[in-house]
Figure (cartoon, rainbow over the protein chains, first blue to last red):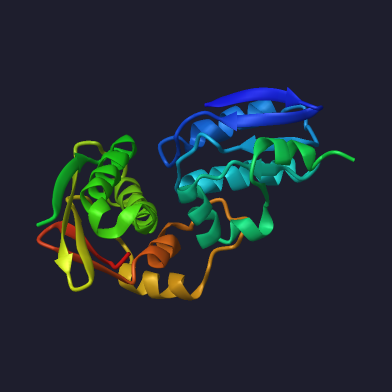
Length: 111
Length: 136
């Protein structure tokens, strides 16, 4: 459920499934942790394909963000309306770094 | 009745419930007005699967929806086990205590309360009933 890209030395992890929910959260977390075993410091999590996120999916995301925060500050991008609402309801939009597009997110690491 | 559906108590089946309900209410609330409904209903149904039905897929969760004033009344019923705590009291407590930003679980009940102005839990004749009022 993850596709990996390297763009301008930034690791971009694209979530491929349309839902990150209670049925998918454990698998998402496991796959994600495998992808960041090398402790990358510049990571973008691209949610463009995700149309629904529930609290279990959010918990899994928080878990991987906490892991990434030990080495850098991940940037999240591509929030669809329902996911954006979830971020707003839980105020995650205030504590996580969110950019509109993948390009914006990758560019935020420049300089 | 605006909508009625039953599913097996499987996390994978929860989207059937929320997608079906949202389709039937699209004209009433519009796409934007359905987002909180979708989020809240998924939280409610996930909790039933995980806690009341305890992962047993032979349990059944049913949802009915009917008009109620300026919104709709949703009733979720399941034949799972009774909660060992007072869920209405837990809801009052959850409403007053937003979860920590970096908590990895424990947001479900609080989120439910953010999506529905009225949330009530009941148990009668071996059936758990969750009654939710939604106004869009």
